[in-house]
Image (cartoon, rainbow, N blue to C red; front, side):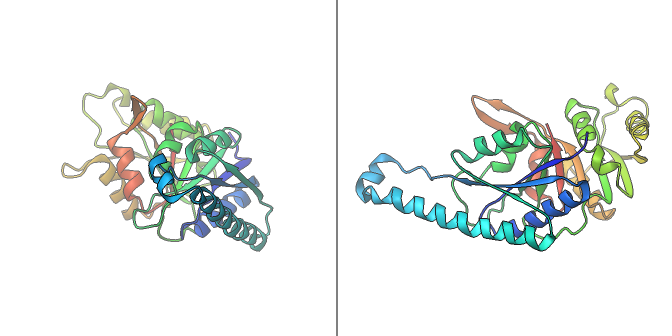
Length: 278
């Protein structure tokens, strides 16, 4: 797999500028085309509320969305111009998650932001990362809402549990790992009776990666007092990891997304970029 098309989701948050810069650096690294997507999503207003306020509420919402789009478009094009790389501007009306997932199908990598509970949000942004990770069908890079990330992929940790999801994540991350200075494949709190791991957890996947020009170090880590998600983030911080690669785990129950505990913890608490595949 090579990365030739990158899609970055754009919004009005304070973290959007850094997300654009991350996407631009990756576009430069992989010589990829970059597209920025803004979704004009109108908040749901119950009919009884609209009846009391009047029809002007819809015109007001539309004007607000148009002003936000102009601001974000200006920011995106200015950052592209500063970086000396072309950027394709896209904007569309509709459900935020559905629009992003539709555009994702024609890209090799999707860049979105971590949800920030302290930020002002537009309709649909709560749960955005969760749903895009699960439904986009493409690898999704989740950029934390706080911090700057001038380097992504020099020190990579691949979380491995021999599942379908971690297998997909490993292969989706090959372009990153093939250019990385150091890759470690980590089995966190593996179970003794987990036959999928084999006698030596991570041994077979590191051998497989070596045949794809990736030299990886196999590690098994344990902590009785930490969950797998906590253990991964703790070890990533200790080792100076700048990109965590992991499968995304979850399922739908009556159209409601039920995220796995590890995936939920990483999405909520990561402070480094996370590349997730489903």
